[in-house]
Amino acid sequence: MSITDTRPVEENSPSAPPIAGARSRRGRRLYPLAVRLHFYAGIFVAPFILIAALTGALYAIAPTIEGFVSRDLLRVDTTGPDQGLSAQVGAAVATRPDLTLVAVAPAPSDGETTRVLFNDPTLGDSERLSVFVDPHTAQPVGESVVYGSGGALPLRTWLSELHRSLHLGEPGRLYSELAASWLWVIALFGLVLWVHRVRKRKSRRSAQWLVKPDLSQTRRRKMNWHGAIGVWILPVVLLLSATGMTWSTYAGENVTKLREELSWTTPAVTVAKSGDAAAPSDHRSAGHTAPAPVDPAARIAQLDRVYEVARANGITQGAEIAVPATPDEAFAIKELRLPGTFTIDALAVDGETGTVTDRLAFADWPLMAKLTSWGIAFHMGLLFGLINQLLLLAIMLGLVTVIVLGYRMWWQRRPVRKSALPVPPRRGVLRRTSLWITVPMVAAAVAVGWFVPLIGVSLVVFLLIDVALGLAARTDKV
Image (cartoon, rainbow, N blue to C red; front, side, top):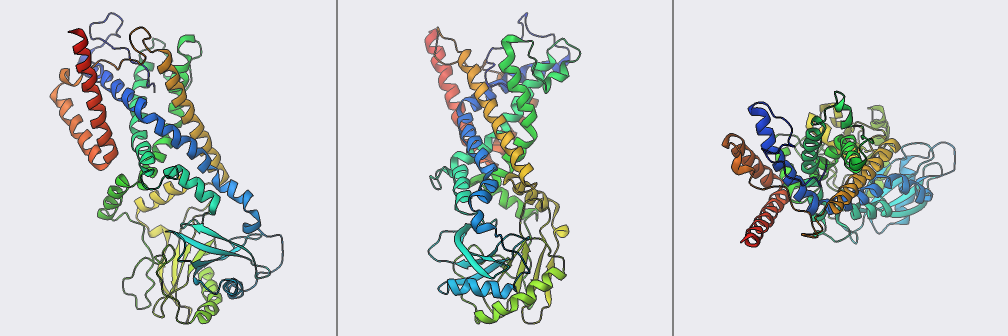
């Protein structure tokens, strides 16, 4: 998957491999185009991908780091039976009577704390204040700001924001979107180039060199490691690129619209007791405009019944219980995205009667909503727990290696006498290619550029640079 092989492959060159048939001639004509695009994208976009890979490596192991650094909040050493959920929540509310109770996440397993979540108007979007309670003693052990549906603590939130925007705000998100948008393009074009190179070898067992670096080629060891490692990490890189774009600003908006049009959005239980359509059950969890409960003490007292009903109806893993803000709403109980969990079931329970008013099993989600949920959990390092995090760390280090090797080869092959930078592969490929190939290719580029705007904008920039270089070369000849 080289970004450095800039040597032109002339059609009549005696060193060119023998080509037979129209199909091979088309491939020979398109190969320089693939090299050219891989060259420009690699030179100008790879730095952004490198930063995303380095920050992504830290983000991949953030859950484990968080568990170690914040152990005093997340875990307790006490033993014995759990106190009632209402007692735990009551103790937390007593420490923060100035804030509005919005949700509670009971301790998912022995030795872990219960999170009691409050709406704090001084916090940012998707942030809540959590009081951590020892479930065995019903005593608060501390409090912290948590972020998002995953309840990330400040350290993991900081690493997440570093990966997403380098802490530069909305403008900084363009870096990560550019990296996610181009990563799959560079990777796939690199695969095409690597397969082409391997097929040129005369060895009958040349296919093995797709995944095994040929160390016998002393002058091409960097190239072979570059290509082989690229093949190893390719499947996960494509998944990370796809899931990364769902969080982006411009491409993410188009992805959201597409999911809505195709009914691929994540469903939610209805919390209205009347059964009428209502806003998603967790709409108050991340906001700061929910009104105070009519009777907070009554709501807290109902939590024991609600939690018991939820467990009796299959909500047995870690879950969050959203406390209703108005009398005509039910409690919404939704399983959390925790390490090693693959389903997210949800219920709505009337706190006064203990009646289940709505039910949503993960099995009833649309297929694409399931795949999106799994992909996001994998991207966050939560789907398979520690194994998931270590795999992502290895993939990110592999991606860093591929990029560094690519730039190393690019620098070593620069034409020192003529220029400090390598010359791009030969131009004019599209002019010599059949319209049956050119037209669909251009149409595909326009479609991708519209759906993923940063690809479209950067393609135009690459074209302008290419035209400028071409004009400069003609001027030098004259």
